[in-house]
Length: 241
Image (cartoon, rainbow, N blue to C red; front, side, top):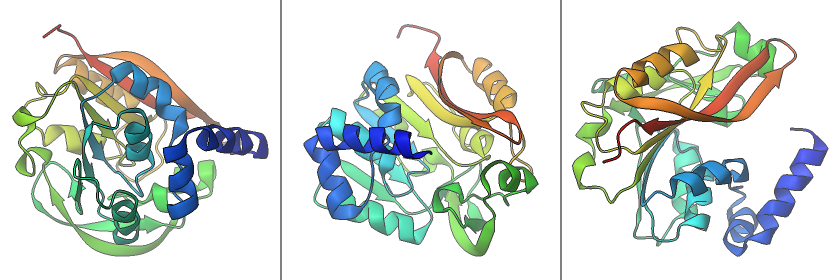
């Protein structure tokens, strides 16, 4: 992010007391670039898979003070920061493990840019596009989403947000039914950045087969190495339950 966008983002953060307080007290900046998508979905429940320090959950909380939030973050340092941001908020539930297709323990690659950490090893594409590489490895617990919370008991509408750096299909395949979700908002890549990762078209096809259509694309990242590289994609359930 260049200086001008950084200044614009800081100005947006300072306009809202909750966002400003979170920056000043916890050094966690709400992802204001997602506010349009969040406002469109207006979720009563957020499932934040790949919550990191709480940037997206903070954006949701700033717009929707009564939303229930279930957040999943396996990286201990990031999860600790998330916990400090939302300490005392009874509607926020932090789960300190990764979400995948099956129960187990897996290697987690901690990147030199923390929010690029993943269950997959950063590849040459990630280095070429963003200058990011793995700095260490840790072991983390992995669970399917439906084994952790009762998805049928969540206040609707429900927004499933996924930001897991290449293992999006594993997250989705670990959910027996997508019926509880009204919206799925997921960061997807158009080129390979991590070893063995899935790409945009694979996830789009998977979701189409399970009753979700692509509604919009936000925050496209264009790099000198690849051109269009990543984007945040909003999928909406096809029916009108």
